[in-house]
Amino acid sequence: MRKNILYILTAVFAGLFTNSCTKDFETVNVNPNIVSDVDVRLLFTSSLVPMQTSRGAEFWNEGFTHFLSATQLVTGQSYAVSTTAVNGRYNLFYSSVLPNLVEIRRLISLKTDKEKFEQINAITYIPQVMMALKVSDMNGSMPYTEANKGRDEGKYNPKYDSQEALYTVWLKELSDAIATLEKATANQVSLGNNDVFFGGDVTRWIKLANSLKLRIAARYQNQDVAKATQIFKEVMADAVGPFSSSADQLVHLNPAYYPFGVDGYNIDIYSRHFAVGTAIAFLKSSADPRLGIYYDKNSLTGSFKDTLAKYNRTLPSWVNVADPNVMYQGGPADFQSNPSVSTYFVNPFNGGGSNRYQLISTVNRKFFAPTVDRGAGTVMDVLFSYAEVCLQISEFVQKGYGTGINTKGSAAEWYNKGVRASVKTMNDIAVAAGSTSYSNIDALIDIHLANPKVKFDGTNDLEKIYIQSLLNFYREPNEAFTLARRTGYPKFNSTLLPREAVADILPRRWWTLDPGQVNSANWNAAMLEQGFTPNDFTIAKLNAERIWFDKKSPDYGKGN
Image (tube, rainbow, N blue to C red):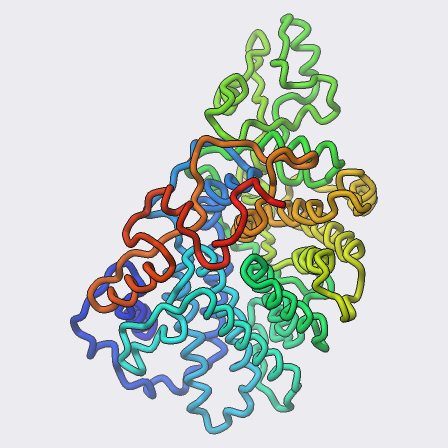
């Protein structure tokens, strides 16, 4: 316990939390050799578990209320940014993820048989980059190359590395890790079950590292397309490559994990979250099986038509009673833009007598929180999916990045594999959760892929890739938000999935606070270097002052 406290204090003194102090440094800078006999595999578990178990709080603080709202998959309240609830990933990285990974490498360096830990040493960089990228996605510059040096080096004022520099560092760390792991050095200590990601499977760690390189390449596109192309070619030429099937993807399945509380009701911690009408319309018109997986039915089921006829009631004109999927309805993306529809977010339709009908579908709460309403399902989280890899490769091939190399398939082939993998994975999650799922999922996917709004047929193919990527990120809102920022999709006036205009200004990043005198100068320099107004967290600033990867991106809804 005392050791963990020291880790946290190191991060505090490094100026990485919002408050800092300059007293009692001597209590932090203790003899580092005192714990040299710690089993490094236990420290590895301590770094990975928070990356998995923090996702529930991310969803209710950011995922539903900000990211999926900005991408117009979820709606239900006027947009408002809390100055305290968002950006938890920042502190999590410095308090719970980075310290243990750095400590593992330090302890390995002290071992007389350090050569047996070469693979573990290399693997530590992969989750570190994965989590750091997530932090930078919302904050831009961040302490990294000099972070977590307070305990061993007495450095409490780490510089803030620019996002452009971070990408270079991370790509090297991933490439170096891949090179080490692909050597297949003998007599290596295995992480075994202490590796809660892959159970010590080195090959899957290589594949995750390559998949992360693709994720970084996607962020380069608006700033340096040549670099994005180079990264893509490197990954495709690698002997192991990225994820090659759904069996490779990063899955967390734990019956004792309750991201929204034991009873699941924290999923409604701020308000109910509803479907957006344009998303529902697209899922219906494209015969997408994820319609019922992602959203709950409203009250228009069973004999509701007989009840309406009995009491001579007529549903609002925006509800098509003849629609076979009438039980799925969405509302406006802007809660206040269409009162004749948005009133039904909170007010049921009076069907006569004691009959009241909720018209607008909510998110499928059991899909996210299997124990809600006394459910007995299990949370299955996919932290990095095979579908993401397939759709990302399809995008790169479609844009011509694969010229001169073996892309192992056409853009259409990768697209079809990505859509199939996404729908099947979401159905598997639904099965585990005990929510809406389908036993004939393969047949339904065949129908979906043949639909004109989905079929890769030379018409709006790039937009189709973006839309399917967005739908695949329904449970990865950080990635959905990044996709919407870098591409400008969903776009206005689309014939597939159009974006609605909203009155609210939407942020494109989060902020960090002045850490105090110990590192204020570096923080202030980083804010100014990025073009940020220090300590101004107004939505207008968070929209206009963008992080590096986003500076040349199209505005929301203005994708090419």
